[in-house]
Image (cartoon, rainbow, N blue to C red; front, side, top):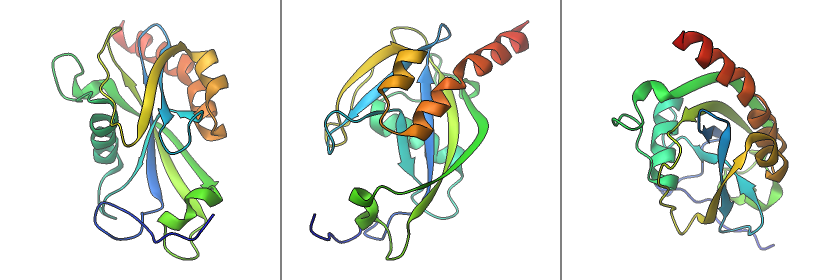
Length: 169
């Protein structure tokens, strides 16, 4: 693949700090998105910080809205529906995407969040980023992810659902 210049919204290299947001329903259905730049690659919402001082929770809110049209902080999806799962992944950036980062950057640090939404929540995809979406039971969703860290995060969902259920009592 030819070497391409780094890209980002601001014209600078991407920041190697990102979020992964597992969007799910209370009964364990998980939203997956098919990447437009890699058809057949399914994932949860992901995205990098826009600025080094951007809080990861703000990155998560922004990426969810940009990629799915779901707005955190509404009556349907209140602020407390977005939860920091206290999971951090450090992984090697796939070579196909390294051109987006500064020279020499090979690893990314990813903070994992969960977002509980009502069943039937409408999804509006960003067509430049994703081709289609699907809701799947959590185990099936984990199996479909191309990224091992994404699959692993989804496998944590039952524990977080149980914690939410206990907190609601």
